[in-house]
Image (cartoon, rainbow, N blue to C red; front, side, top):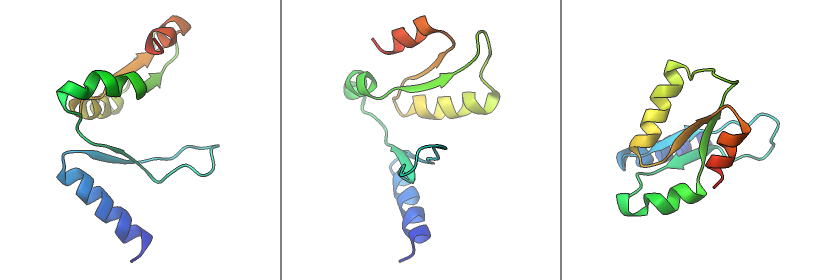
Length: 97
């Protein structure tokens, strides 16, 4: 079976479970995996998951997120993951606590 067909099957299976399978591109980092799979996190596990998985958007000081970024953040938050926007070192320190 071709890689494209396997990848489509993966995406379909993830979505059938209510998750998201984002195509993961990381310029400048060779060898990054093809997909970032996020499955719904049960409420009783969210504190632990969010302690170790950080989804962060970095902005210039006082810059706002774009509407598309807000929509994607909403999808991710609906799965039970925390999404943070940072524009300063103190905010980064807060995320890392």
